[in-house]
Image (cartoon, rainbow, N blue to C red; front, side):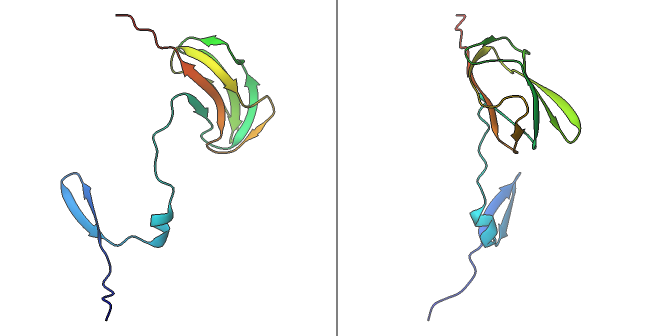
Amino acid sequence: MEDKKPKYEVFVVNTAQYYTLHTKKYGLRKKWQADDPNEIRSVIPGTILEVYVKAGQDLAVGDKLLKYEAMKMQTILEVPFQGTVKKVLVSEGDKVKKDQVLILLEELNEDLT
């Protein structure tokens, strides 16, 4: 006779330990991954209004990458580090989906020591 006891999962929050049953949907979810800083992605669906860079262009911290509109708000995305544009994957007028890669960057690693 097979024992059909539910299998409890253990997880820890701060120092407290909890036992719970996970649903099938929870087990099939997309696992969290840290963002790649070299990929500039759309946060929400929108439309590309302007692209300020092209492939091969050198960038300094804070340079404008592109302007896009989502939910009637316009946002200018800036480069978070010094580097080079590897590839621009969108052009003006493109409709983008949530989490779509817009621009690929390559960080400039200067060893100042």
